[in-house]
Length: 62
Length: 379
View 1: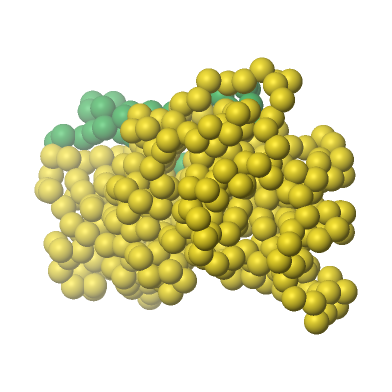
View 2: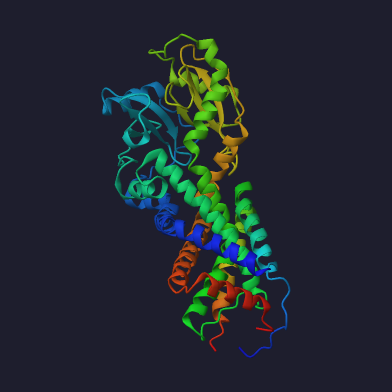
């Protein structure tokens, strides 16, 4: 990976906090209704899977 | 974070994880097919397909349905009847005694229109039931359930302590860092961290709700004692009625009491769901939440009249809502598929954690590694 990295990322807990909050929304949404509520849940968990795929594609092989 | 604090959290993470990992692997592996139990049931015929009936088609009398079911298992008594929400099919659970546990129940599926038996294997036999028992109680009933619940609690502690350690380790790294080219241990450690954080919220909720589900039996008993105790004085000294009022009349009375809901299942007196003197007609709504938050209508099993419509206590609401949040069965097939993918990622977290433990070195080495990562200049 040749892109320069920022010197000091912000708190390491920002990403986990977003993930936990999004997961809660995803878990509860489909419980509350059908249709759009289901789509919100599907979108949240698909995004989590996409994060894994993204991390793998960008892995640092040096 | 101070070195001493890192060490304390490291020790917590190590031991809570080590104790529960093998059981969690078992839970993740057996849970995977259980996510798709409904679909697998349709494929194998355990859950037979019956064409839907017109909404206004007349249904066969329920007392006749129960008699038909008992003809298949002479000498048994009826325990529960319940309805498939999607097809004109009902089940009648029977057993030798009113307190027959699920493992020994004998069940008949009947067409709700004409009372024809719908051929299907018993729910408490076969591969899926075997996996279900492995997943829930290791074939050890309540002790097994409580043991698995304890493993669930350890899993939750392991996730939280893992998240705390993620802080110092990732202090100088971007989220999603996977360094696969340096050494194998670092690659697995990065993978463990990325997947652990991605599955964080899901695994916490599924772990916690799983642990809550292991308490179903004691919670139901507490609810019985608390709520039905109110009526116990009224029936003090009376034996459980041997001649029961019409089931059809009881269900009709419950429908009249809750006109906006439909009956999901009925418990017979003595089965542990409605005391010794009542039918418990459990009504459900038709949204994802109201489908699960049953509203019980207690119908006197001798007079056939409604005695009470007790509100479920808060702990029963928590239990009933913990079920879908653990099973992932409330958002159609796409949610089940995502549930399965997150389950697979959790398996990778568990296996990578085990690998990191095998390749460990001393606790001090690991704590030093975390402290170094926290204090390093740049990446």
